[in-house]
View 1 (cartoon, one colour):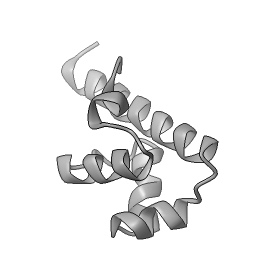
View 2 (view 1 turned 30 degrees about the vertical axis):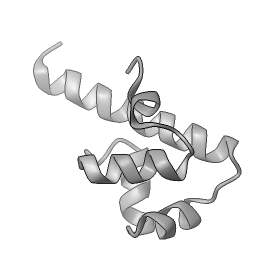
View 3 (view 1 turned 90 degrees about the vertical axis):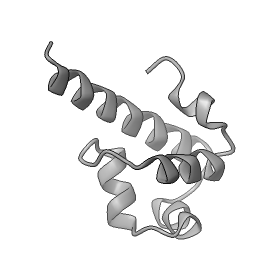
View 4 (view 1 turned 135 degrees about the horizontal axis):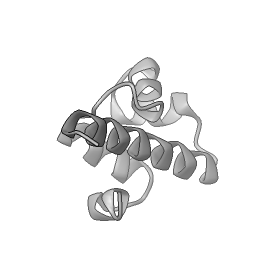
Length: 76
């Protein structure tokens, strides 16, 4: 795998983890996006691995899912 493929795989894996945790906590996409102050479309793109989130967005997502940033990123 080259560097771009590694990054793409990492972004997809992160998105899947976010979506799984959000659903397991019973939080809607709309609610989490609203609480983070981003658009529903932006959060959806992150969950589907189409967007590489900024650090500040990742922190907000982790907080919204009651995780530390380290927990969110562990073993990606």
